[in-house]
Image 1 (cartoon, rainbow, N blue to C red):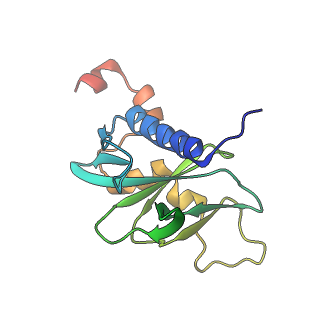
Image 2 (image 1 turned 180 degrees about the vertical axis):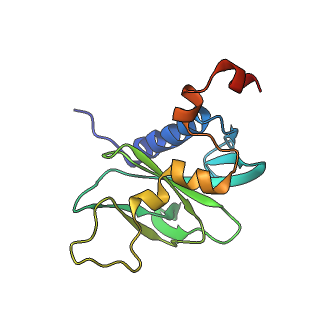
Image 3 (image 1 turned 30 degrees about the horizontal axis):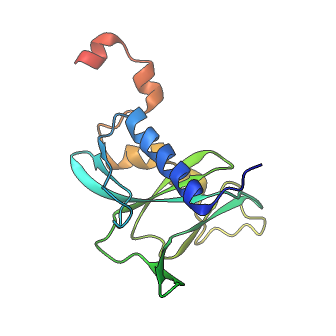
Length: 163
């Protein structure tokens, strides 16, 4: 079996998020090169939003962990840095194991985010990020009043599409 490197994992996440935007008929643009802060730019309700895609492989103990930092190399050393205000608007988080995409405003987490798909065993409720609050369809429905889920789009009539 071929080992999967972090670049391949990141490419998979970017492709999944890009595909989701296209599927939902959200205009999406891809910045040229690997040196930009944002991986994608998407049009949410007429406003361009800079999207940084982060991909996580593991999902265990009822949660997924996403590293929200950027890694640079300088003098043959790896340097981790957090994103700064004004660089991005949203994180699009993709988990390989659960095959789900989450959309998180930049203002919420800073360097790491835990998203829970099961309630905590200790019944903690404060500072818990539940999956349903960040699923891409749920978040887009709050951002854009014209947002239509893929199920609504697939089930509409030709007359509704043309209108």
